[in-house]
Image (cartoon, rainbow, N blue to C red):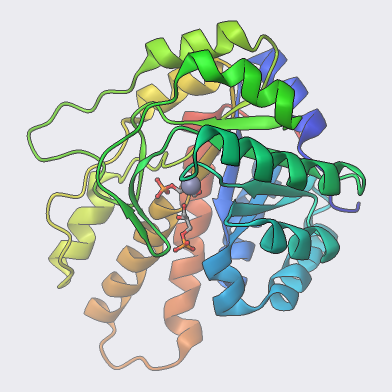
Length: 309
Ligand code: G3H
Ligand code: 13P
Ligand code: ZN
C-alpha cells in the first residue's frame, strides 16, 4: 500500500470518537518500534518528521525507512511534516513524497499566518497533499524555539482562518505544551476544554489537532533519574484528559517526548545492568521494545484507535 493522506483517517476518527497518534520519527529503531506496535494493534498511523529530524537523519533516509515500514506492515501510514517553519520546507517535503504537511505560522500575525498557510495549501492541494495549520501558540521547547507562556487559540478566529486558508486540519492551543515540563511542580494540570468545545462548535465536522500531548509518565522519569538522569519536575498531560480529547473533535494527537523518555529510560536501565556492553544493538534492542510498548499503550489507553486501520 502507498502512503495515504490523513483525510479518510480523520473523517472516520471524527465520526467514531477516537484519535490517530502522530509520532515523531528520527531513526530506524523509532520507526520500527512505532510501526510494530501499530501493526499488532491494527491501528492507522501518522509518522511525523520535524525540520530537526530532517537535519539529523536526512530526508531521503527517513523516506526510505518509512517506505520499508509500509512494505513490512501493510498499514495505512500518513507521512507528515511536523511544524513546517516556512513555505520552502513544506514544498521540499511535498516534492519529496510526504502526504501531509504542517505549516506552523503560529508565531506570525493572524494575517501573515493566513497568507503563508494559504500559499502552502494551494501548492499542496494541487499535488494531493493535505495541510495542517495552527492558531494560538503552545508554551514549551520545540526545536530552537522556547515559548514561555501559552497563547490560547481565540475561537473567534478559527472560522475565518479555515475558510481563507483552506486547511484540512487545525492545531489549537488549549494548555498543552511541548517537551517534558508542561506544568510547574504543585500546579494541577488543566486544559481549556471550554476553548476546544467552542472551536468545535464553530467548525462542525472539522478535525482538530493537539500538539504537546505527551503524558510524561512518572515511572519513566523515575527510571531515568534512578540511573543518573536529571529530569526533576518533569510533568505531562494526564492520560484521562487526552482520552477526553480523543473522544471529541480532536483527531490527531502528537507524541514525541514520551517516546524519548521511554527510549532514554530503557538505555539508561540497560547500561546500569550491563555496564560492559558496547554493541549498539544490545542497548538499541530494549530501546526499540520500549518505543513499541509506549506506542501500544497510547493506542489502547489514550487514542482508542486499535483495530481501526
Ligand atoms: O514539536 C516538536 C517535536 O517534539 C519535534 O522535536 O524539533 O526536536 O525534532 P524536534
Ligand atoms: P510532546 O513534546 O508533548 O511529545 O509533543 C510533541 C509534538 O507536539 C510534536 O509536534
Ligand atoms: Zn508540536
